[in-house]
Length: 251
Ligand code: WAQ
Ligand code: MG
Image (tube, helix red, strand yellow):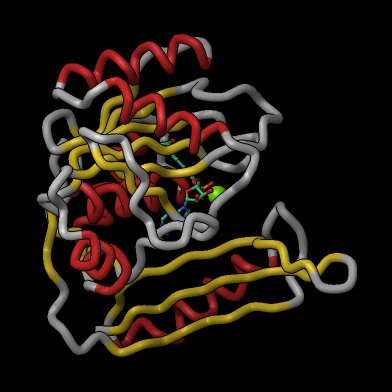
């Protein structure tokens, strides 16, 4: 199996590099050229603009990918960011996450400093643990089996949310939630026009939250709320390096 990753960026001014698009998956030998073409086209046709640098990495996976189940998806009714915040506090409190950890998560998610990866917040002390606060922890080496992807497409179509954005977020969230030290995740897109966010946990699955931010707002991010006694090094290694493939789809 192969992990194929794409990132596209553009240089503005004399040196500032801005992110345009990214994607990744786990594939068989026979799919490589098709996927490379798909990723190149995706990079070149992104609404954020034309990249001047596209990096596609094709890396053989030596370790057999760990199989995890996809989180079940639910879309909540929510009309405003205030309502979203209330729902998130209620839902996470309901599974025992202390208020302080949720408050600190919101600080990260509403900050104007966009990170490339996620923040790690300890659930009891609410302390941030990611070694690089500007970058955060980047979840990588993840994909979905073909049969599971078909089932997922079908199910998301029925819910009228079959988009690459939802699929990729769900695959990422399923990898994250599969680690025993992860209690919950909160995500807000940094795309100013994408106003649906989500929260996850092993207990309630993937809850989509419309209007988590207003159109045009540029903040966004991801926070993983983790067990107080989590082994941070091992957790980061799992999130960044361990190949994980989603195989089961429950709806
Ligand atoms: N690993 C960790 N964090 C990441 C990664 C990654 N691979 N990619 C992005 N992030 C962080 C980073 O801080 C971004 O600013 C933030 O997440 C948001 O990234 O069901 O599109 O790519 O409709 O803007 C949610 C879909 C879409 C909800 C989320 O996130 C739904 C999305 P974005
Ligand atoms: Mg995005």
